[in-house]
Structure formats: structure tokens, C-alpha cells
Image 1: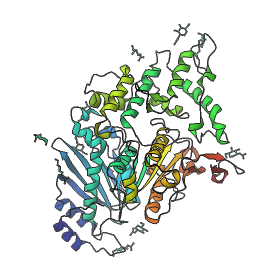
Image 2: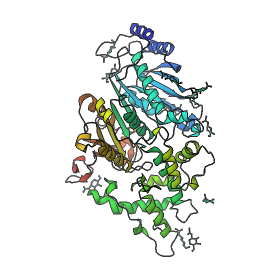
Image 3: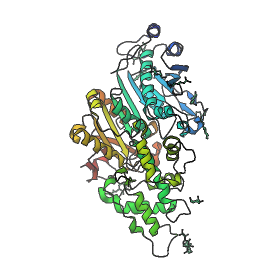
Image 4: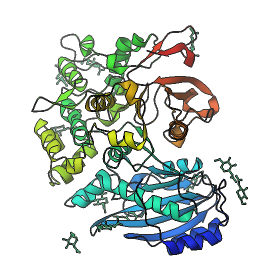
Length: 536
Ligand SMILES: *[C@@H]1O[C@H](CO)[C@@H](O)[C@H](O)[C@H]1NC(C)=O
Ligand SMILES: *[C@@H]1O[C@H](CO)[C@@H](O)[C@H](O)[C@H]1NC(C)=O
Ligand SMILES: *[C@@H]1O[C@H](CO)[C@@H](O)[C@H](O)[C@H]1NC(C)=O
Ligand SMILES: *[C@@H]1O[C@H](CO)[C@@H](O)[C@H](O)[C@H]1NC(C)=O
Ligand SMILES: *[C@@H]1O[C@H](CO)[C@@H](O)[C@H](O)[C@H]1NC(C)=O
Ligand SMILES: *[C@@H]1O[C@H](CO)[C@@H](O)[C@H](O)[C@H]1NC(C)=O
Ligand SMILES: *[C@@H]1O[C@H](CO)[C@@H](O)[C@H](O)[C@H]1NC(C)=O
Ligand SMILES: *[C@@H]1O[C@H](CO)[C@@H](O)[C@H](O)[C@H]1NC(C)=O
Ligand SMILES: *[C@@H]1O[C@H](CO)[C@@H](O)[C@H](O)[C@H]1NC(C)=O
Ligand SMILES: *[C@@H]1O[C@H](CO)[C@@H](O)[C@H](O)[C@H]1NC(C)=O
Ligand SMILES: *[C@@H]1O[C@H](CO)[C@@H](O)[C@H](O)[C@H]1NC(C)=O
């Protein structure tokens, strides 16, 4: 672990106001300790906005200034008694992060950093709150700018650098210092929880700062980010808009989804609306070809549409003949139709090319070609690709990474995760049996982007994705026991509630397999029972 400087004056002050025993990390007078923390914190580049003690149940109103309303987080209920401290941390003289720490009074000794999403710009307060409910001292940061768009990248590579890695790294270093300042005991173990861009951020730390975390949960990681962002821009050009002959209407995508299920749902042994291994699904859109002369159907595809749909489900190669990004996995159409297939540009792609790749706010996403993918991948600022397959330093540190990906992901195709896993295996020369010591990857069937879906999607990535029925059905609980007890997960368990409503009860539970294993229905019990499935 790296060493941290402690402001001694503050430690002395806190020691006199806290009675902390070896087995009891509870802060005795948390309101006074919190005020003292805010008043006395003296760390380089850190300007405290305020520190406030919040009792459990407080419904916090969050600042909506500086475009923060686009983050969609106006309030957050505080789950446990805690000290909230907010600050600005300068990373250069023209960039910096907004950082928050939530320090529970009843502390487990564990530290956790949360990640971000998309090209934001938003502290994920619900994740900060979620981790504090587990007793973590938890931090979140805005990744160097506010809001969900990329305007702030324009002509400021320092803001881009914060977004790619520095905001998270800086927030983690400062967060650990504050944790060790507030409590009189030093933190014991350090964790990270993130999905999507947050997943990429977690991998970035593992690759470049391998000693920062002991345990990392990464969902649906945005690995190979400039390539991902290029691929995300292809759909608008493949499908066009509602006046193009290649365009597929939202209704017609429902028919495509039905045909995909006809062709692929039974491969795992049961027709349950969930494709367990989408890598085995080689969808043939030609099966939906319309009769000659029909061009307005909601059940069949014209030749132009067949060609476009086939392209959506084909790996995307660059001008140099190398893979840019794998195909969209079949099975995600019901939501992808509103994101990528709706006849409009994708804002993350548009922002990345306008404000980072070309620094040209007038760049037109309809003009996108493979040459743009090459420009983005060649530019690769601060190694945003995040594709380093050598994890030996993290392995040596004793770190553990639990990687998962929903197999009905409609934003980052889940094919990208085995791509990286296999790359790590090849780079390190390790088979899965040895990667298992520190890196395990799980495919979560029927699950969308970080959340939701027809499958048993509740694996504990977020509070809203945590089934209350069994605390072990939770990736956050699993990473703790793996790191601290060496109890590594063989499967991760997901829950599906009836109509996704906990009050209506559990619809089914399924154990999701560790790659390269896949789930197969072996019976004899109903497919709704987890024991009816086997990882092979
Ligand atoms: C920790 O100590 C405080 C103060 O002595 C006490 O109120 C609290 O119940 C203790 N908690 C545990 C879990 O022992
Ligand atoms: C918290 O307050 C907001 C309004 O500021 C309200 O919309 C929300 O329902 C409240 N949440 C709870 C759980 O009371
Ligand atoms: C706020 O959002 C608007 C567009 O809604 C944008 O023009 C402006 O640059 C943003 N401001 C900042 C500081 O990001
Ligand atoms: C403070 O910020 C400057 C850049 O403005 C950086 O060089 C320095 O390392 C930072 N200090 C710490 C302790 O991070
Ligand atoms: C900001 O820092 C850069 C790099 O250290 C330096 O060249 C520049 O003069 C500084 N600008 C201001 C306004 O201090
Ligand atoms: C502190 O948290 C632990 C679980 O981490 C719980 O068992 C205990 O009851 C809590 N104590 C208090 C005083 O809330
Ligand atoms: C981001 O929002 C925070 C309020 O949460 C504000 O203090 C900060 O100045 C904003 N940062 C930028 C770069 O606009
Ligand atoms: C579709 O795209 C074409 C060419 O880019 C454009 O001229 C037309 O206005 C667009 N139509 C709609 C409905 O957006
Ligand atoms: C569909 O066919 C009709 C009649 O041939 C034609 O007028 C129309 O432009 C066609 N529409 C599309 C989207 O191809
Ligand atoms: C398709 O076109 C035919 C002939 O013009 C028309 O009768 C039918 O209602 C159209 N169907 C749809 C789904 O638009
Ligand atoms: C399995 O369970 C589902 C959902 O409860 C039910 O619809 C189905 O009929 C059951 N299948 C068998 C073979 O019992």
C-alpha cells in the first residue's frame, strides 16, 4: 500500500473526542467530530465546502447548479448515521473534481470508492448511500466536470485527463486520507464499485494503480473506450433515420426480438425468454425477409433492412482490418431500439468526437465513417482504451476483481467482456484455473446495462438491484468475503421479482456462471429453480 501523510494536529483533536476501541469503530460524538473534520482538514489542493452530520433517514436535497439537474439526482435518503464532507480538489490550475465522503458512525473499517457513468460528470449518490449501508467509508467524485455531457472536454485536455483516470485516482487518494483522519483507526481494506464507465474506471485503476484497491467490482465495463464510442456511432449510419429504407421501426424491432428468441432461446435447453449464452446465437435476419414488393410491414424485413440488421449483429472491423468492437449481442433489442436504433445520434459519441477527437463543435455524427474510428483509436488520450492485459501487479498486490456483464446489454455489447478476459489470459499466459485466483468474470443472462431485464438481474450492483431476501446474493458482499476470507465466488446469484416488484415476491433465482462456463438447463426441476441449471 502507498503511504499517506496525516495532518497530526487533527488526529490529536479527533482522538480526544472519539472513544474508539479495537473491536468497536463507532464514532462517539459524530456531530462534533464531523464539524472538526470540516474545520481542520488541511490537505494540499483540497478546499472543503462543508461537513455536516446527518442522522439516518435524512432526505438530502442535492445541489442542482452547474447543469447538475441533468444528473437526475435531486435528493438522496441517507441510510445510516454519517458525516458528509464535500470539497473541491484541484488537479491542475484549470481542472479539478468535486469530491464527497460519507463516513458512517458505525464503521466496519472498510473504504469504498464509487464510479461514474457515460461521459458524466455526476456523483452517483445512490451508490454512495448504498455502500454506507454496508458500513463502508464511501467516496464519490464528479470525474472533473458536471452533468451528463462532454462540453467541458472542449479545449481542455486536463478535464479529459480527469475523466479518463485522474479524477478517480485523486478522489481515492484524498478519500483514504480523510477516512484515516476522521476515524482514529486506519482503514483495513479498500474496495471499488462501478458499472459502465465506472467499470472502465475500475479496470483503469487495476491496470495503472494496482495497489489502490484490494477488491474491485466492475459491471459492464466500457473497455476500449475510444473504440466503443466509435462503434456506438455506427448505428445511426447503419440504420439511418425514419425516412431511410434501412430504418427499422420500433415495432419491427419487437418482431426481430421475437425471431431472435425463436432462433436462440432454446440453445440453453429451455424457452424462457432468456438466452444464457449469447455467444452461441448466430442470428439470421434473412429468416425475416419480406415477400417482394412489401416494404411497410411490422413483421418482415425488406432486403435493405435485412442488410442493416445483419450489420448491427456483425463484428465491427477497422480500416486496418483489426477488430474495432464486437457486434451487438442479440437479445437486447427491446431497449436498444430506443437508444441506438431510434434514428438519432448517440450523444456520448457526438460529444467525444466534437470535443475530444476533433475539437470541432460542428462535427456531424451522420458523417461518421471507419476513418473516424481510426482517428479516435489513434488519439487514445491518456490510454482511454484501458486494454492492458497484464494484471500481474494487481495479482501480486493480492487484489481480487469480480467482473460481470449483463447479456442483454443494450449499450455496451457483452461480447466485449470475454474479449478482454481472453486478452488477459493470453497476455499473462494463464488459463482460467489460474486467473481464478484474482480475476473472475460472470455472464449475467437476460440483464440489460448494469440493471434490469427479463433475467435474474438483481446481483447487488446498486441498492435498487439488491434483493433483500438473501444478503449473499450480492456482488458487494461477495467481494468482501473473497478479499477478507479467501472465499471466492463460483457463481453469482441473481434474483428476479414478479414484475420487478419486491412486494409481489420472487419470480425466480438463477446462479450465473463463471466464464468460460455457460448455463444449461439440466432439470428435472422447473427452470425457475436454480438447481435445475448447471454450469458446463
Ligand atoms: C460501540 O461503543 C459505543 C460507545 O461505547 C456503544 O454505544 C456501542 O453500542 C458500541 N457498539 C458495538 C457494536 O459494540
Ligand atoms: C425526498 O425529497 C424529495 C423532494 O425533495 C421527494 O421527491 C422524495 O420523495 C423524498 N424521498 C423520500 C424517501 O421521502
Ligand atoms: C450547461 O449545459 C448547456 C447545454 O444545456 C451547455 O451549453 C453549457 O456549456 C453547459 N455548461 C457547463 C458549464 O457545462
Ligand atoms: C496538487 O496539484 C498539483 C497540480 O496543480 C500537483 O502537481 C500536486 O501533485 C498536487 N498535490 C497532491 C498532494 O496531490
Ligand atoms: C497553469 O499551469 C500551467 C502548467 O503548469 C502553466 O503553464 C500556466 O502558466 C498556469 N496558468 C496559470 C494561470 O497559472
Ligand atoms: C453496526 O453495524 C453492524 C454491522 O456492520 C451491526 O451488526 C451493529 O448492530 C451496528 N451497530 C450499531 C450501534 O448500529
Ligand atoms: C460542479 O457542481 C458543484 C456543486 O456540486 C460546484 O461546486 C462546482 O463548482 C461545479 N463544477 C463545475 C466545474 O462547474
Ligand atoms: C433523415 O436524414 C436525412 C439525411 O441526413 C435528412 O435530410 C432528413 O431530414 C432526416 N429525416 C428525419 C425525419 O430526421
Ligand atoms: C414503399 O413502397 C411504396 C410503393 O412502391 C413507395 O412509394 C415507398 O416509397 C416505399 N417506401 C419505402 C420506405 O421504401
Ligand atoms: C402497407 O401498405 C398497404 C398498401 O398500401 C396498406 O394497405 C397497409 O395498411 C400498410 N400496412 C402498414 C402496416 O402500414
Ligand atoms: C415452470 O414455472 C413457470 C412459472 O411459474 C410455469 O409457467 C411453467 O408452467 C412451469 N413449467 C413446468 C413444466 O412446470
